[in-house]
Amino acid sequence: MFSLAHAAGPGGEPNALVSFLPLIVIFVLFYFMLIRPQMKRAKDQRKMLEALQKGDEVVTASGQVGKVTKVGDQFVALEIAEGVVTQVQKQSIATLLPKGTIKSL
Image 1 (cartoon, rainbow, N blue to C red):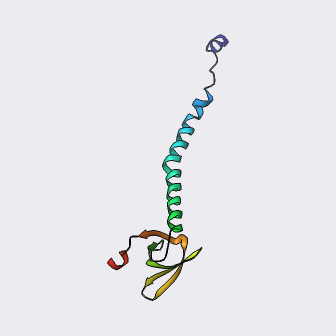
Image 2: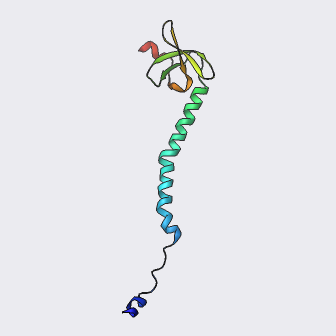
Image 3: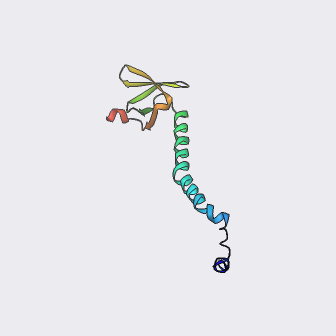
């Protein structure tokens, strides 16, 4: 009985790289499909906010459409109707619209 167990030989350990290969592949896929596109979107948003200037037409995260009348470091004055100006945080601006979009609404 002991001779049969001894005759089977050692099972051996799998290579460390082979055991971690699925984790490495999952991390690489996770990076290219989730992390990298999110970083690109954040970079584009930052560039858009830095380039924001008076007269630009924007949409806020809450869905308000308006024209920028004043740009500060943290806040933007947004004219949402004629004579109605609100202050919104710069980070709440979601989209920069093409010129003349508000008139077509």
